[in-house]
Amino acid sequence: MIFLQETCGAELESVRRGLGGSWHTAFRAYSERDAAGRTAPVRCDTPGAGTAGFAILSAYPLSSVTAVASQQPTVGVRRGILCATVTAHELRVCTAHLSPRHSDAAHPAWEFRNDQLKALAHAADARRTVYGGDLNVNPPGSRNPFSWVWPSGPYTDQRECDQPSASSRAGRDTHVSGHKFDYLFTGLPRVRCSVRDTGTSDHYALLLRVRTG
Image (cartoon, rainbow, N blue to C red; front, top):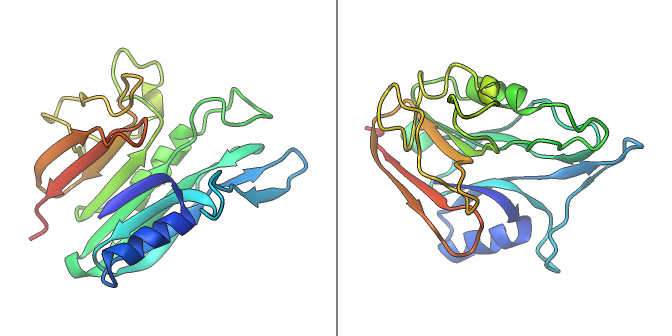
């Protein structure tokens, strides 16, 4: 199971075909809304790569694929939350790409991450779930003035991939800037968490292994 952000639809489909017929994808494109209220999908820069968006790539069939509603910028890029069920493991998975600060060109002071995090946690409010992605916010704590955007479920009802203890909100950096922006939460027993620099992105890959049996 792979959660992807800032991927290209055509390239994702090419990767899926290369992996074989047993692999499946769920993809949603980013959209951009202008000041006149017109909305258009965001295109990838590479010719023929299709639209840019976020996705789930799975070695098992996906069902009940759902785009989760959440507040989005009135003018600017709209990201989102995408959930699906992996029936083979009775597992609900949700990937998200949340709005960074100043995402709304018309209202740069508006904050969207609190509503988006709440919507993400609510959509994945079950024990047999894995959810996360690029949340564009640092972990809650005394050094983070935006800790208030975090709802109560993450880190408590579900543990984060790199959370060493119940009381900890620590985690290794997942971005070249020295911040942790990427997360994986689950209510299942965690076996291992790894952070890897793939050399192809300014984000590091976050790898979580859980027990589903």
